[in-house]
Amino acid sequence: MSFTEYAVKALRDGGYKVTKPRKQVLEAIEKADGPMSPCDIGKMTEKEGKHLDQVTIYRVMNLLCSLNLVHKVLSRGGYVRCDLLEEEGCHRFLLCRGCGNLQEFHDEALCDRESQIAQKMGFRAEHHVTESSGLCKDCRD
Image 1 (cartoon, helix red, strand yellow):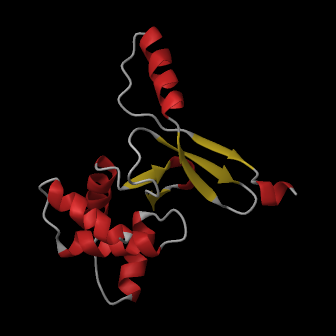
Image 2 (cartoon, rainbow, N blue to C red):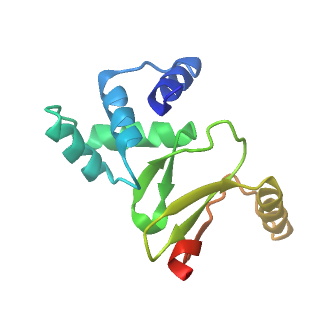
Image 3 (cartoon, rainbow, N blue to C red):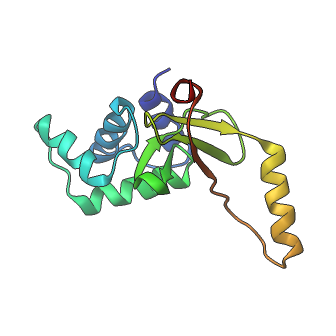
């Protein structure tokens, strides 16, 4: 099943309509090689003869983030499709500053540990974001 097909099913299962703009954004995200800003998504859809205004794109991206279908990559200023759709919990990123490669991973123990640390400090964590920047194996060699 493609990312777009999976996301359409998730939208429907969540009680959301699968509107034309939502489908266009999903298709753009599926085609992307890396993080895309809402502006990048708008440019991609324009090249295909479709117009989406920025407000619509931001709204769609916020919905997709809330459903864990896409993730915002803070250090890159864009969004990526979730590659671990079936994995519950917090997803993390390793970002190579050499080649730009981005790897997504899931670690339940890390998620639990971050929640424990927050709780010790009197804080209730609702969402965790972790991005590690460095060099991948290929760039180090």
